[in-house]
Image (cartoon, rainbow, N blue to C red):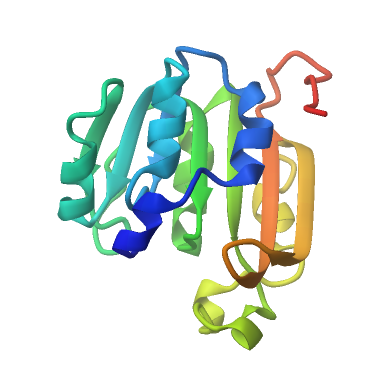
Length: 184
């Protein structure tokens, strides 16, 4: 993440589906960068755990009420939240496939997963362009499998800060009261 990310508002996808996350919920913001989503959920009264390997970015979040920071390289070290549960997990602009089982185990049985990252085809618009960092067609759906209930899924080209190809998924745990209320 660059210093520019501090100026970005929270993802419209995350904002749209944040109603699925109760005020006061415990939220994990994975690879939080400058913390745009950590700040968004903390402002709603959530208790946020913001994790990233960039300690300088985490330092900027240290004074934000409701945010606890954890410095961890999620790709090089063991999952730092073994045995912990979160009411919501937010992941944007980050993909490390090996973490997916850890994310699913860390989500409360009635929790919400909000995920948005780059997908195949993004190489036409710049970085990331390495296939290791681009989801394949429907990959988020495959990763969730039958373990969660998919509330919303999109994939395709967007015009946001810059053109990009993304996949977006919101899914809830199987103990979530059904049906969840969808945002308009």
